[in-house]
Structures are given as C-alpha cells and as structure tokens.
Amino acid sequence: MTMLGTDRSREAAVLAAVPTQLLIGGAWRDSSSGATIAVDDPATGRTLAHVADATAADGDAALAAAAAAQGRWARTAPRDRGEILRRAYETLVARVDDLALLMTLEMGKSVAESRTEVLYAAEFFRWFSEEAVRISGRYSTSPDGRTRLLTTKRPVGPCLFITPWNFPMAMGTRKIGPAVAAGCTMVVKPANQTPLSMLALAQILIEAGLPDGVLNVVTTSATGEVMEPLIRDPRLRKLSFTGSTQVGQRLIEQSAQQLLRTSMELGGNAPFLVFDDADLDVAVDAAMAAKMRNVGQACTAANRFHVQDGVAEEFTRRLTERMAAMTVGRGTEDGVDVGPLVDEAGRRKVDELVRDAVAQGATVTTGGHRLDGPGYFYAPTVLDEVPWTARILREEVFGPVAPITRFASEQDGVAMANATEFGLAAYVFTRDVGRAFRVCEALEAGMVGLNQGVVSNPAAPFGGIKASGFGREGGAEGIEEYLETQYVGIAP
Ligand code: NAP
Image (cartoon, rainbow, N blue to C red; front, side, top):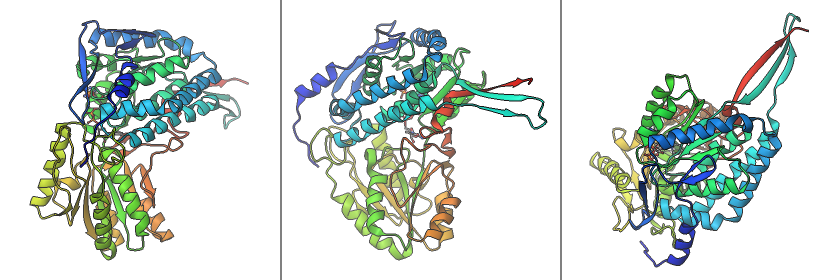
C-alpha cells in the first residue's frame, strides 16, 4: 500500500470554492439553528469543511420555494430548459479536474474514478437537454369514431430527491437532469458524508441560469426528522430515492399517505456468470470493472462470481493476479487504483462478511484483511469456493471483495444467479449466441451486461426489479418519471 504526500494548497483552493450553506429560493443561507455538519476525508479522517445542518423549518422553506417556483418553471420553453442543462454540462466538463478532486476528498475513490463519475454525471445533463424538446403527446380518434382523444404530458410538480454517498454527483444528475427537462422544481438532500459535490453542482446550475427556487439543496444530520414532513406534505408530488432497500421501504410507507409518485433505486446483489465458452480475457477485464469500480461500493457491483467448472480455476487464478497487483492508497495520489472505504462501519461489514465466508470454508487467494490507516482501507480480496451458506452471497458486500462459487450446468448457473431477493444488475459471459439470449431472458434483473462489466449509460434505462426497486433513470424512459399524462376527450 502506498501513502504518499499530496498538494494541500490545491485541495484547500478546491474546498474553498464550494458553497457550504443551504440553497433555498435561489439564496445561500445558514441553517435556522446555526448548526453545521463536519465533512471528513475518509482517507485521513481530517475534517474538510462544515456544511449547514438544516432543521425541519429549513426543509419546509425549501419545499415552499420549490412549490412557489413550480408554476412559472412549468411554463418555461422546453428549449430554454434544455439550454440550461447544456450549459451546466459544458461547465462540468470544463471543471472536471477540480470537481474530481473534490469528490475524492469527500468520498475516497481515486481521482481517475472521480473524473469518470463527473463526466458520467455530466452526460445526464447533455442527454436530458436533448430530451427536454422531445416531450410529446398524441391525437387520435376513439374506436367508435365519436370522440377525439388528445393526450398530453405535463410536469409532475415539486420533487424531493434523496441521494447516497457512493456516487455523490451522478446519483443527483440522474434525477435533476430529467426533472429540469420536464419542468419540475425540486428539493435535493445529498448524503451527509458527501454533500460537497452536490453543493458544487448546484452552484454550476445557478451559473447556467437555473431560475431561483427550481433547485433547492438541504443538508441535514436530522435526516428522518427533516425529510418525513416533506414526504407527507401535499405540496410535494414526487419522491425519487437512491439508497438502501431498508430506507426505501420506510420512505414508501411514508409516501403512501398522499399517494406520492415514487422512484426507488435501491440495493443490489449482482451475479457475474462466466460460462465455459467465455472469452476469459474479456471476462477478467470485465470482472475487474464490475467489482472494483468505486472500491466495490456500487449498487451494480458484481457481488458474486458464479463460474462454470471448466474455467473456474483459470478464471480464479487470473482474477487473483489482477486483484493482488492493485495499488491501494489515498485516492488523490497518482497511480492509486483503490481508495479507502467510506467509513469504519462499511469496512467492518466487509471484514465480517469475509470472516464469515472463511469460517464456513472459503479459501482466500489474495487479501482478506484490513490495511493500516489512517483511513478505512481494505485489501482487494478474492475468495474461492465460497459455500452457498456464506452471508457474502446474499448480502451486498460494498467493498473490494470477489467471492467465487462454481457451477456445472447452465441451469444451475441461472438458478444461482436468481437466488436473491434483489434484481438490479447481472453480468453474463459467453460466446454462444443461443445461450446468451436464453440466459439474459432467464435472469431476474433490470439490467444485464452481456460480455461487458459496466451497465450504466445515460442513454439506457437504469433501474431494478424485486427488492432493487422500481422506476428508471436515463434513456427515453427517464423523463417519464417526471411527467403526468392528461387526456382531453373532444366532441368533434
Ligand atoms: P442509505 O443509508 O439508504 O442512505 C441513502 C440516503 O438516504 C442518504 O442521503 C441518507 O441520508 C438518506 N436517509 C437515510 N435514512 C433516511 C430516512 N429515515 N429518511 C430519509 N432519508 C434517509 O444508503 P447508503 O448506505 O448511504 O447507500 C448505499 C446504498 O445505496 C446501497 O444499498 C446501494 O446499493 C444503494 N444504491 C443504489 C443505487 C441504484 O441506483 N439502485 C445507486 C447507488 C446506491 P444521510 O446518510 O445523510 O443520513
């Protein structure tokens, strides 16, 4: 593990440029209590900044601002809304280096990975700048010929977005982009651990010309107390949440009272299936991407590797070599592949799952232990022949650990892949076209990577089934989450 020095003056300049107050009605302001939340660097434990700690009254003010801005914003020309997104996209791309450093400081992953996320996040603004002008309806004749049917789309209204720490910017732009394009106003609550990327993003949207009140940002340590009244408030018309299944379930209960429209992007437990006929070069490269992106802290991360008997040994050997060769260290350093986990709780869970698997008979082929800090580092780990009873095959590991199991027949592989309550992503590696279609169809997952280890794409509908939630972000489907349908029956 390398732990090198770093350019503290550049870090200080990047941090100093980020707003740390609440954004309400176009104005940056302190929390009504004056309280703040410390934002720490997971690689060092050092406090980077303090952001405003909103009260329930501040949350209410943010929703009031969104509700007040809704009418006028809905009447804005679609082209104008699209141009705001386009300008914000261009600014994100122009400032990618500073934004990537900021993200790494608060979240830990390498700067190279943060750059990838900033550019990915920006692409949602570019995509939805193009979708803003393609919202359409239809005109038709009823089957009996007596009525004309005019079907139109309108913005759903004020939205609440709650986002997680693992992709602090992209999880925001996937919601903000289509909401802006559709003509919705919003309140955004980023995760406590990583609010700075969202605050920087909000500043960019203001610079791009987003009118006051369209986007409001609330950071708070009293998350439930500040969010629940908003979810129960009749001014709110839509909730989009990305995070754990457990919190998502609670929010759906809260939203039921006023039949709020909801989108839920929840946890995953992605299987990675490698068949005997797979191209192993492709499969191992993809395994590294699907496992190690974001230090394994991705909802789409390959959580379990199911490998057919004929290639299992070779696949395990090659994956072990690649994992063992990774450089772990502070994400701001050149040449670092793997940053720290976000916090000690996350690292403890990873370690617990590894110990449980080993106690049940799994073999550690590399890693399998924490690394000394400061910071929450964990060695890239491969576990072979993990028994089916191990917790790591059922729970999201959210860390740099690849558990491998073996299977004999195609049917067994598919059955293993589907043996989970989650249904977000799955990965399949085969060169047999017939098998590829059969297996993709049989997989219970919202997204499948066929011979590739990345499924995220702004032009594709991202989302899950089963306990991974519902709703889609990105693609032509993404904007539908923010539109209501109205039809007018017209007597001819
Ligand atoms: P989490 O604990 O559910 O937190 C996510 C967000 O919900 C944070 O902003 C958190 O705020 C907020 N929150 C927590 N309790 C809340 C409550 N009672 N009421 C309202 N909001 C509440 O999830 P996490 O551990 O941070 O994130 C990792 C999870 O997200 C994983 O399960 C991962 O698979 C999932 N994820 C899913 C997707 C997807 O698209 N499907 C993408 C990325 C991540 P604070 O933390 O600030 O309190």
